[in-house]
Image (cartoon, rainbow, N blue to C red; front, side):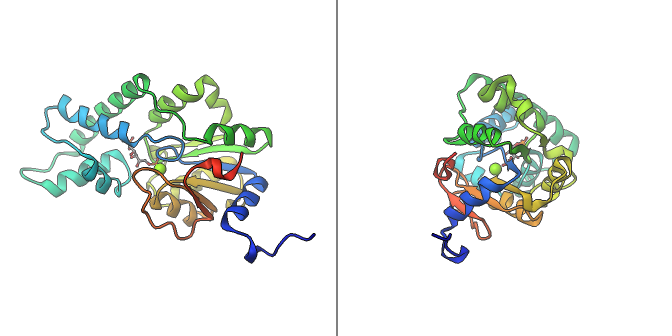
Length: 241
Ligand code: XBP
Ligand code: MG
């Protein structure tokens, strides 16, 4: 029997087909490979205490702040909103964010933050199929190490042909810069790849770079508008490895 025309296939079936045919799979980190945002939030709060700021980000505030991609940008956005007193300087933000990054690594080493269901199976299946793997994230580079060392062990670096983090590009997601840099490092056209994201900003970054994107819903972004995604799933297990 012939395959049904594309219009008759479900988004999930189409995503599975495109996934199997892709030359490379490109993964976001936070929210996609693991639910890391609660550890980020805890690290920000510990950093505020450590530098003597009376700030505390609860879940509701953090949900709003997550619309601002990047930790340093998030600190600035919060400071600008509350504004009782002079704004904190770029230097102070950089120092505060450095403390936050150290706290995140310590929390990640101490806590269990597993990869999300289906992630490791998908990585292994893709590797077995000869597909290239890449990371495209707007988090700080050492945070990638912290998560992947803790979950995949030392083998993780050999698994990824390209790794692009926040400070490798001028503009963070939703700008396409990080995806364009990944494509350049992979030396592949966007159409040969599939991206995996959990947020609207991530989806827009992939789509603006021309990379078809599968969304896996995460705790903080589950209600985002994912128009333009190839498919939206709750867990990557729904794709089959
Ligand atoms: C996640 C982010 C990051 C993290 C915090 O983006 O926006 O800012 O929340 O990390 P993605 P930093 O899902 O694209 O990885 O404090 O290091 O920015
Ligand atoms: Mg994300």
